[in-house]
Structures are given as C-alpha cells and as structure tokens.
Image (cartoon, rainbow, N blue to C red):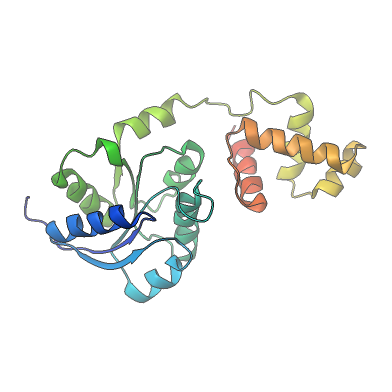
Length: 218
C-alpha cells in the first residue's frame, strides 16, 4: 500500500460477509469506516450525522435487489449535494449511471467488484472520488459509450406522443383525454416506454423522471 490520507467512509452492502470483508479492507488501507449499513433506508441521516468523506455502496440492495443502491446514491446527492459516492457492484446500470455521472459536482466512481485486482486500486479510487474526481471501471465506460445515442429510436409514434405528454407533466388520465384513448392504453404505452428505455422496475415517479430526461437529452 502507498501512503495516502485516511478517509471517513460509510459502506452500504447487503451481504454480511461482503460488508465485513470490505470494512476490513478499508481499515487495512488505513481508513475509518464510520458506518456499515445493510440497506440505504437510513443513508441520508447517517451521512448527515457521521459526515463521511466518501460513501461506498452496492447497486442492488433490499427490498427488491434491483437498483435501490444507485437510486439511493442519486437521492443522497440531491439531499446533500456534492457527497462523494463510489458505486461498487457486479452490475452496470447504464441509465442510472449516466444520470449519476451527469452531476457536474464530481466526486463519483463506479467500479466492478469482480474486476478489482488489488487493494491499491480500491484505495486510489476512494482517494480520487473523495477529492472530487471520478473513478470509472473501463467496462462501465465501454457500456456507457456503446449505449444507443438516441434511446428513443425504438419507440413507436404513439409511444413518442405519450412520452412527450409525460414530459409536459401530464398524468395518465390527462394523457388519455388528450389522445382520446383509455387510461389503460396509456398505462400500457408508458410501461412499454419504460421497458424500451431500459428502466427496470422501481418507483413509478422516478421512472417517469428518467424517461423525461431521456426525451430531453435526445
């Protein structure tokens, strides 16, 4: 290990074995783990109380083990702007990763567990993110670059109409009235838009926001 400043870290990892293992790695690297959480439910409060210099978290956390972790990272950055976050996972969630990286505040990292080859690599990423920089696994970069430039290309004309009205802030009932179709039909179109944009099951309101972002950034 190279000599580097000690950091205050909060870890969010649902697996007890992995959580304890990462805590030991952090301590071996000279850092102080001020919180080791099994889910992100109390994350904002813990960050406010413990004031870590970086938060390390997995993507898939309870209760559904889909994308709670990275959504929690986005919520944390909204609640406490500029909080350094290092995502450490086996999975690449390109839609959420793109939104996380789009934050101009910096202090963001995304590493893949299986591709970490040394404790030095982890420590270097922690130091870079804590200092306001970025640390991205090459595979994450490759996946982001290879993602379709226009995520709306696969949408049907009707789905594009529905998404445009969603972007205007209209409810499903309002969209149904505007397009003279049933609410059930609107719900099917909205679900199809989510699926084609790669928005996995999560809070309805959050997926609507991400779909609007995709529409505005086309």
